[in-house]
Every structure is written in C-alpha cells, then in structure tokens.
Image (cartoon, rainbow, N blue to C red; front, side):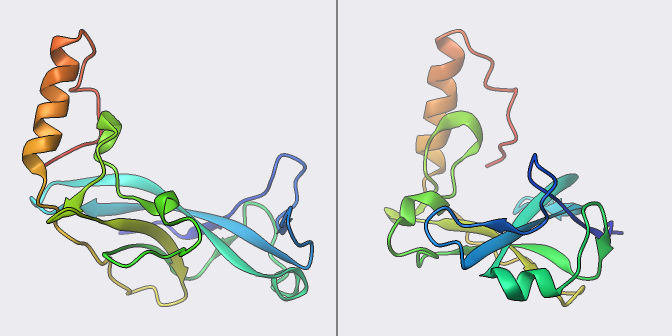
Length: 155
C-alpha cells in the first residue's frame, strides 16, 4: 500500500515556493513513497516527488504545512509529446546513470511525476525501443572501470 503524500518545504521552511521569473506564480513540492512496478514486472518501493504549480495566492489558500500528509497520489506520466515545449529536454526519460535517453524509434520519451487528487490514478508508461544502445552504454561503462550494476536501471 502506498504511503500518504507529504508536503515539503524549501530550506527556509516555505511550503509555497515563488517562481524566480514571476513572483505571482510558484509551486508546492510533495513526496510519496510508493510501490512502482516496471515493464518487466519488477516491483520496488520508491520515493516519488512532484511539483504542484499554480498562482501563489491559490497555493497558499490550501493552508498546507511542511510535513503534513494529504490525500492524493504522485503518478508517473510518460509520453512521446513533451510536457514543456520551451525546454522539452528537462523531461527526457533517461536510462539510469547511463545518460542515454530512452526512445521509441528515435523519438525521445518524456517522463514527469504529477500530483493528482485521485488516490487510485495509474501511472502511464511508454516502452522504449533502444535497449541495445542502453546495454552497450552500460557494457562500455563496466569496461571503463565504473560499476554499472549500481543503477536503478532495468531493460
């Protein structure tokens, strides 16, 4: 069973963090420890965090406090369409520490964690087709002396 979603804060203790570009907007960071099952059926508990963007006045109206547990769920959304058109590379799905972007027939997969109120919402995943490139990158890293087994990566 998933843990409740916890409200975070910045180093100064602010739950609502203002945007550096426009102080009228900001975000709240939330985190949840939950079971995630990958495409091969391998399950593990992972901490997932998400940013809830919005207008500062609306976010402040939630009245949330740091460490408070709230209803909802942090879900993983994967897509072949970028979530951010100005900086799509921010959301590339990268295979562990390999640095290789996961792709489908050469098109990048985008991955984002999103907070939703529905506690029963499901993750959305996109299977990559460049497993050979990723395997080769890990093999090269192992030959180079690093330990590629020390990753969160599965094919």
